[in-house]
Image (cartoon, rainbow, N blue to C red; front, side, top):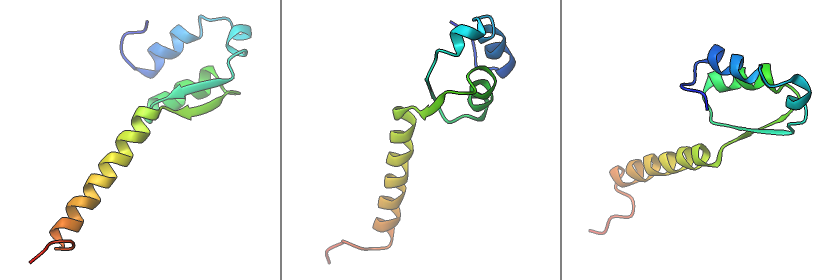
Amino acid sequence: MVAGTKEETVISVLQRIPESTRKKVTEVTLDMTGNMELIYKRCFPKTTRVTDRFHVQKLATEALQERRIKHRSEGYGCRK
């Protein structure tokens, strides 16, 4: 376990894993923060990157909620 998400800290811990072992990794699941992208590129450059489902769902739900609020404030769907 790595405490925190500082790029250099996580990279230094992951680079302790032999490169031959890291090359066996085929897919890396990440959240959408920029520092995770750098970690992924430095430690697992030839793997497939997958954005984790939680963050995708969160963004979709927030966008839908924003649209619902806008739709409601425009007065659509209200019965008079």
